[in-house]
Image (tube, rainbow, N blue to C red; front, side, top):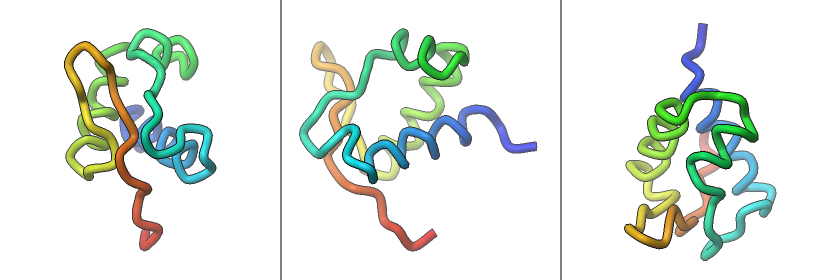
Length: 75
């Protein structure tokens, strides 16, 4: 079984690829993502941490999470 945070990361990644969240845009807040995908806030944080590690988003204190790159499509 795939962990929920991995599934969520893939959903957000797909939204970025489809330009729901274009480069330079803010992602919804952790609470909003939690409500949208019906997962816990800690699951959202884990997914966002993976996206940050992959340099897809950048966490900016006071500004939220900003899309800085498109994911590589070499999966």
